[in-house]
Image (cartoon, rainbow, N blue to C red):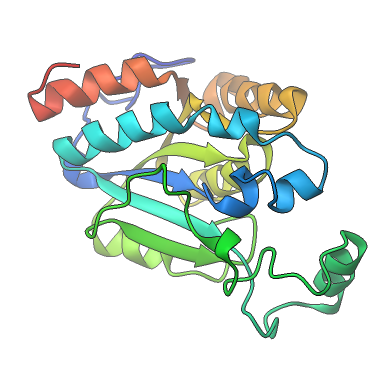
Length: 224
């Protein structure tokens, strides 16, 4: 089991790699680059970049233990055919007209080179905050018999939390890894982590990366 709050994960003590996936949410240039969308909105991407070493350590040990690694990327089609009038209005209001920011055709859509993406990893492309909305994520998870999800990535309060909430509603067992998630808004990040634990774990459990790495290392039979 993984030491966590408000209960150790998983609740029944059955941590089975073949039924567990590590989600790496939206660690893309548009959110982590000093010239990307996040920076254009006035947020400092430094807190997001600060989690990359922890995420890479988690990816490495999770891969060694036999977990499925799933990365997500957020962005619209190059022709913006999947964008509603409201989304177009928000894009214009954000000063993004005439740019390739948050478009799949732009370099900002790509996962940052710091993150180790292996050929066997799964990549889910999305337009919404939740990785479940209008994607085949749930189909992939059900097809692989995955019942347990571990969450990393950005931003804690938006895409990570929205995906987490939907996962809980779909009865996946969820663990959020606190120091492997980040936001440009410190208050929102801390509030999002706190919300995981309310009502005795309404959105699952919360752990730090050291506890997760220790448990997964034992599964993989390697030193943590």
